[in-house]
Length: 305
Image 1 (cartoon, one colour):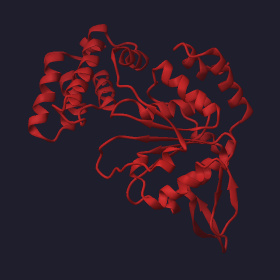
Image 2 (tube, helix red, strand yellow; image 1 turned 60 degrees about the vertical axis):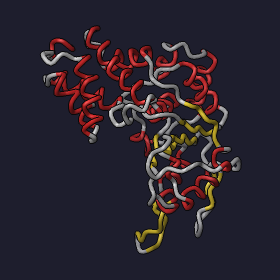
Image 3 (spheres, helix red, strand yellow; image 1 turned 120 degrees about the vertical axis):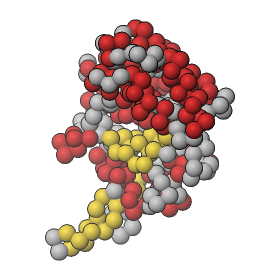
């Protein structure tokens, strides 16, 4: 049993699914040339039902679309799935200038002849990787046309001027999207129909406790409770539209804990990781009040670790 799969067993994921994931990874070994794209995610994902839905879909050859509010772990889940399935990762961050050429490839002159410099989607299709399509609802029409072909049931891409490429049987694509960000738009029905959709649940005390325990096993219980409390308090305020989601930053919270471990005072660490993410003075005061309520000013590293 691969050690990566123990991560699923500790969360009570179905043994039948775990066995199928192991068979999948054994059936499709990763080529040596792309083994550098195998990586253990820095943050574990906790959530048995979501993991079971995602694994079942991927085993059946489906692609996933992860939706939901900020800090629900969409990218963390995508990275964890690639790790669990033992697949190389190809990240595509969509923005207004992402074109089909970047996804499939562009002509380049090498060894006195024109050849294709392969893009992320092409390489993912060729080597059986997991393509993480970040902020897919920011993709412009030119890029969406490539996704339509790639995610189609025919599983093949026609590269103009070159050959058709058939997707590797292990290749999968996982899209992520946030609602309401600047530059985003509604996904058309044709694109959404090519995915199975998981609406990510918000973080709760159980999921946050698991994450903190995995990343900071030496964090003291009281400090862990306050760290979780800061995030949950901010999450409630964001849901009630009292603040924006800028300060609702799980990565920032983890980074603050790391700087405390390095020796920085918790107050200063959380100022960098959470409070200073807000640029509106009124909002910053609200966030600062949440942090000060939870973390005494005189706390030191020894109060946390």
